[in-house]
Image 1 (spheres, rainbow, N blue to C red):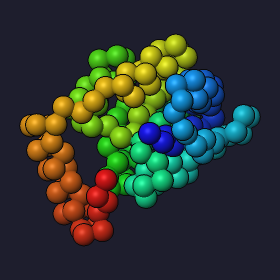
Image 2 (tube, helix red, strand yellow):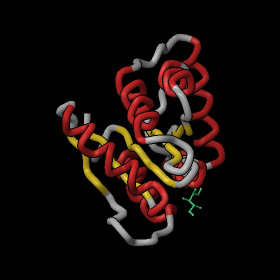
Image 3 (cartoon, rainbow, N blue to C red):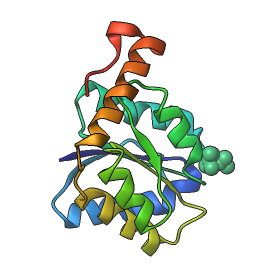
Image 4 (cartoon, protein in one colour):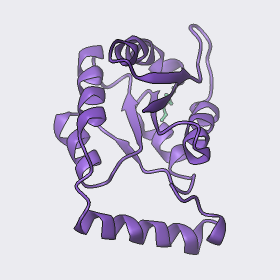
Length: 156
Ligand code: RB5
């Protein structure tokens, strides 16, 4: 699995902890920034990382801002992205089992580093259940095709 990792300044500390966590598990990742000490707009970094998932360069993205909400909003503008803000073990597990989340959005100002890493671990390890949940994802795909670019909608 290849992960696209990005944060703004508010998510930098948690992103800085997630990188070594992924490396320690042997997971390949690309750090799209931000860099230490720079104030940036989450929109730019979130779009870049999510676009790489849509393009197939990465399998999933982990995006961190102050609350996770801004990152999730921008990522979900890209057809094919299923970004989920997760704030505890239950939401992390359900985001994978039911939503097949391919983009984890975290709040660096909401979570401790330990809480954030615990969520990442669950999100990485939990499989999608498929079945009735696949039917619902197929309907989301149909919404994208109707509302967000027709045949150009991503096929991820
Ligand atoms: C930055 O101050 C903050 O607005 C941003 O990190 C994020 O929380 C937005 O959703």
